[in-house]
Every structure is written in C-alpha cells, then in structure tokens.
Amino acid sequence: MIRRIAITGPESTGKSWLAEKLAERYHTVWVPEYAREYLAGLGRSYCHDDILKIAAGQLNHEADAMKTAPGFLFCDTELLVTKIWSEVKYGFCDPWILKKLETHVYDLYLLCDIDLPWEYDPLREHPDRRQFLFDLYYNELTKRKFPFAVVSGTGKARLDMAVNLIEELIV
Image (cartoon, rainbow, N blue to C red):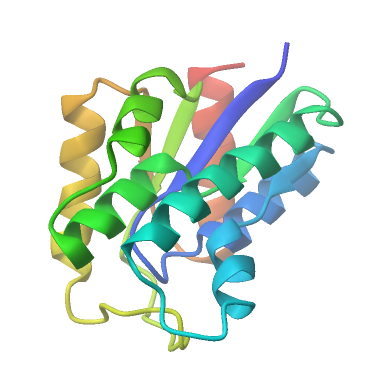
C-alpha cells in the first residue's frame, strides 16, 4: 500500500525542498508543484479558470507518480492549496475542487510553518500575509478533520521533525 503525504502551507515555507528531501529519505518519488510548470508556460497573467486546470494537472501528475512510488508518495501541494489560493485571490473556489477535496484525502498532511525567511519568487504574491495564510491552512485542516501536523525548524531540523512525525503518525 502506498501512503500519500501532502506537503502543504503558504508560499515560501519550504514545501518543495521538504517533499524532495523526504522522497530521498524514503527512497521514493515526489510530485512537484504543477502550478509552477503551468504558470511558467502560460505566457499571460493567470485567471480563475487556470486554477482549476492547475488543480486537475496536479492530480494527474500525482496519479502518474503513484504508478512508480514504492511505499510513500510525497506531494508538493495538494487541492487545499488551490482552494485557498482561489478564495484569497478571487473570493470563491470552483465546485470541482471543493468536491475533489472531500474524496482526495491524504494519509498525512504536513503543514509547513512560516518560520522560514520569505524568499522572493515572481510567482509568489503575499509576503505580508504569511500568518493570515498559515491560519487559513490550519483552520481548514482542522475543520475538515484531516490528519495533519505542523512542521517547523530550518534545514535538517525541519526534515528530522517531518521524519519523526511520519514515523510516529503513519508508519
């Protein structure tokens, strides 16, 4: 059985780094954030409809990775990211994303804390709203009763905390 672990949270919290390092640690594959690939090739400003395409693309990439994942699959972002992004940016979320969120649940969500320094990236939009966004994630995970834990610390300490949580909560 493959255990799916979502790495989630606000921008610039080390999700990609953590997903990659966990995949290395557990000798498996990880699913990069599809939004980066999609937006890099867009050639225009994104709109609300693009968020739905990104959500579907993320799930497609995850399904492909499941075919080769031994034991664990680490996912850099998941549908909660697209939900919160859509609601913060546009004030609503596509019903397809909301419906998929009900059924596409992970074995564990690792919510990345905002204790890392903000790093500029042209795709990031909210350097001044980190606590607000973190609270949205925390509250959504809690409300939906998804299995989650907050990961904090820098570098190896952050990775070690994530490994310890995985070992404690799902292994």
